[in-house]
Length: 511
Ligand SMILES: NC(=O)C1=CN([C@@H]2O[C@H](COP(=O)(O)OP(=O)(O)OC[C@H]3O[C@@H](n4cnc5c(N)ncnc54)[C@H](OP(=O)(O)O)[C@@H]3O)[C@@H](O)[C@H]2O)[C@@H](O)CC1
Ligand SMILES: Nc1ncnc2c1ncn2[C@@H]1O[C@H](COP(=O)(O)OP(=O)(O)O)[C@@H](O)[C@H]1O
Image (cartoon, rainbow, N blue to C red; front, side, top):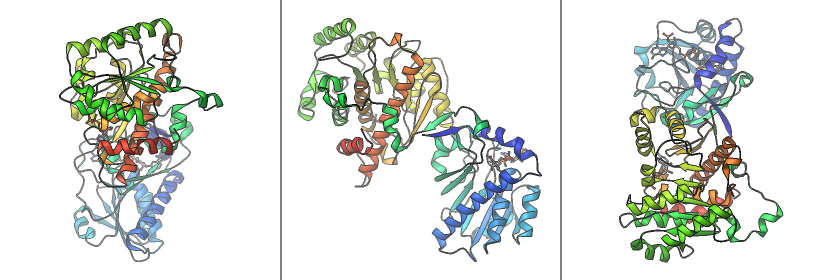
């Protein structure tokens, strides 16, 4: 997992070091890393270095200073470099270094002409010191862009981006990975990211979040892989209850059920409306239907004897395709009252009430559903606000509903009420397809059922439990993303394609 820090935190750590202008070593290290990536990009795009033409947008602050030092390093290697100065002043030592190395400067009005003969643009206009309201020049899409620290126009704390943001093919970021590069629009415009370590970490404190990598699954699941694990019978591998489906959305229940089974579940018990039951049985023969009376008896049994062992349900997946009827509300209330770990999705989210619950719940809203959850809790935000600072609003919902929230999107954000946050990046934009969220719910349900949470969570440290739940949420998103990557190799991706790839995705990641 890679730690992530708010851009302003990194800036606060570096400013005292940068203020002493006699010591430019940090800036030179940053500039060297920038120049190195620029050289790689030039070789990739033009096949040569000597005689190629690089233009840099240079802003008035230290970000511009990085750009100027990088240009001077490239000028010394035979690259024709021009710094386009966007403001009336620029970093003095950087300018002097550029002039000494034989580089040129130009005014902003010369930019369009320079771009006509440009092999690479370095964007060193604004970094972590960006204020709102910036207006940046338009860059033709065919010109490769290398961003210095943060693509100009991106808020390095939140990922919000100005309309005129300059999307980058690569970003070299300094000191630490910044939140604005890994979520929201900032994530979409940063391209490939390289982090240059400047030795700031001891001064940065606790990370704001962690970006999850493919090989983190074992860590997130924290499973007992001892010899006894191989001796478990199906009930011990995990029994999941699924409350889903309606005449209007019969497919959602099937997708969640198939995903749960494909992720390696011991047993699936399903409560679906009568008119969905036949389709479910024919498409998911592994599922065992659960009647209303049996549900009541089983939950009572669970309350008395804990959740372990045969016939007891270890976790619930609730919501895909569910219709809001008195019967589904009754089932939901029964399940919630029994205090089982559950993943709650789709229309079931609208049936929840905010408040303290001290229960093992993962809510899986997309941005629109998060908006509705927050509104119900009295927090008035717009979808635009959520897009501009998704971690912040996912955390608000986690606090308001006292549970783990998994906010879906191109970057999935999993957060606990105390702010612990994990980020999982989608492998492909194709994951945004109908039914893909239902598949995720099934995966999460299986991970919860297999996790063997204690039957009386009140006796266990609540923070530790919500962190464990957050880890499992991220593990589910990781498996989902990897299934997407495998499916995308064959072409476009549908929810059924994800199901087909799930067993392999789970095994690839070490499940
Ligand atoms: N991480 C590290 O360890 C290291 C970081 N380093 C680098 O330092 C960078 C941070 O530098 P920084 O603090 O000087 O801020 P930066 O982004 O250059 O912008 C500030 C200038 O832009 C101006 N300005 C802002 N918004 C504006 C707007 N909307 N419209 C117009 N103007 C606007 C602002 O104006 P002001 O607000 O003062 O009026 C000010 O003049 C960081 O991103 C990284 O590249 C490395 O050198 C070394 C190690
Ligand atoms: N732009 C995107 N790029 C990649 N994945 C995305 C993007 N937008 C959404 N997703 C993912 O697609 C899935 C959609 O879930 P959801 O909206 O619940 O769909 P449905 O209800 O149709 O199943 C989620 O896993 C989400 O993280």
